[in-house]
Length: 147
Ligand SMILES: Cc1cc2nc3c(=O)[nH]c(=O)nc-3n(C[C@H](O)[C@H](O)[C@H](O)COP(=O)(O)O)c2cc1C
Image 1 (cartoon, rainbow, N blue to C red):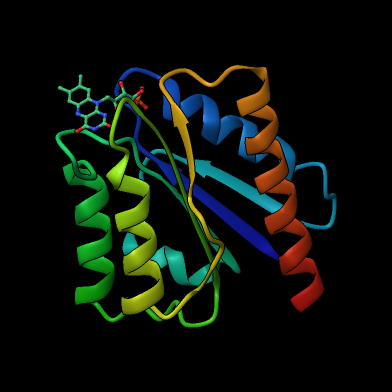
Image 2 (cartoon, rainbow, N blue to C red):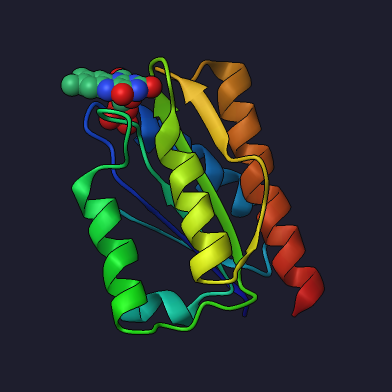
């Protein structure tokens, strides 16, 4: 069965709300397995067909744990080539983190990335949550088509 990983960090819960809504949307496609995690080892990333990373912006950047995950994945040459990649995150005013994550996914890991990343200002409202559900469903449909 095709598998999606949603791995995220969230300090005050906003990106977590997004991550849960994305998982909910992906879960509407029954033939796909969805894992929602706050932590993941770089090696396990290779066992998924799609990897979605949730990264809130702090100090114009992604947080250290997300950076560490990307750096260790690169350092250990974990092969993510041609897997589907997407990035999302809550932000306050500049929102760099999901864009930076997507850049690494595209240029370093050579993943097939969904552009643009999904950014939501502070707490997602119902419209924002619906956008998240749509992203999850869209990724699930894409991996089903290519499996
Ligand atoms: C100390 C601090 C620094 C922040 N720096 C930025 C920033 O550089 N750019 C930005 O867009 N938002 C910034 N924010 C806003 C957060 O991205 C925003 O509160 C977001 O909803 C946090 O997501 P989370 O609840 O998933 O942790 C900052 C917030 C704090 C508390």
